[in-house]
Length: 240
Length: 226
Image (cartoon, rainbow over all chains, first blue to last red):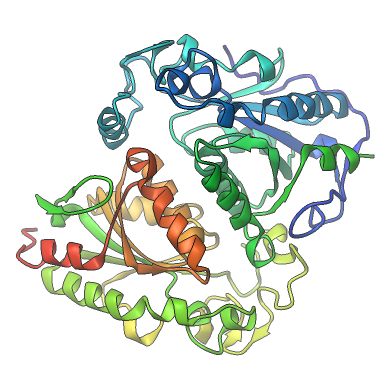
């Protein structure tokens, strides 16, 4: 798939905010045009949350990573209807693994899931394999931006920041998996870059429910150190 | 190669390509009467980091390990402070406002500088960063590359904010990170616990965790060759 830097978006004049959020009504500046807002859906890939994917076949409960799918599907519909910029990310590596750091490969081997080895849905975390694709429930539609990332954060070694600035995006709403790893890393990167961030508690999930809760709680400390937390319902209700 | 008993695996490193990174041990965060305390935080939890970290720093200097300090802060005219960071949550003490130890989080102010116990020695690198992570908007990554550093021993405050963000950035860039559990601190004991657990979870998804004693006992018999 190709990354389209200029997807067609509808101009609706919709505004987001104030959204009932913790620890402050989001965004900090009252409200933002949907056209200046990006919905970023992180790593909703078959290997992480799909039946027959890697996490499923390892015997883990994919119910925890799938829990946010229905709310995310509703949020995607809302984002498309209001004209937000919709961005999907996928974690993965080139087939020759030339963008795979040695320590990441070593550690994946230690837990029995070496990146690049044959998994239940193709080569694990390799671009183009069935397990690397985004699940049908929240699949991208033509014109939406796809960001392929080699790490946990969606900014490092990708064109995400360029895409956001090209579209004059100032505010970011985050969904995806897992809350404490890839979603949090991306939120931290976005926050340091000055984007005003909102993470959706019902559109995220983790393999450990305690880490999901703690990761959301961390966002709310010290007046919103990384941004704020809300539900998808609150965003929809906070749109005018 | 030196080996430290660590979670979830032994951490192997070459002292010649390893840096001790000390994050944001600034007066405003750590000392009584500073910005952190005025926000209602219990700074005694951060104070407890100082004695073991001082010992690690002294040992690192004695064996010739590369030492790098970071400070969070902004230029006096706030031109490098994103509006969201400045205004979010209607803070009682805004960045740049007069605080008990000078203007809050402003470079050059007394409170922005590193505490006396851990003051940088001549020749040690000090990275001034505008955000939580040490890589974004700084020369940190270039400085590491220039020195041939591939492993980081990470210490400082706070565990779940600046330490975690820096470790996540470093991990994505392929650096091996060992976090010293008693040399990082949080205002919140629950975040200290879960912050360390998250680093070593899932086979060390962000890196390794060990107490400073394990690191020191691995380091002391070594001499750096470079």
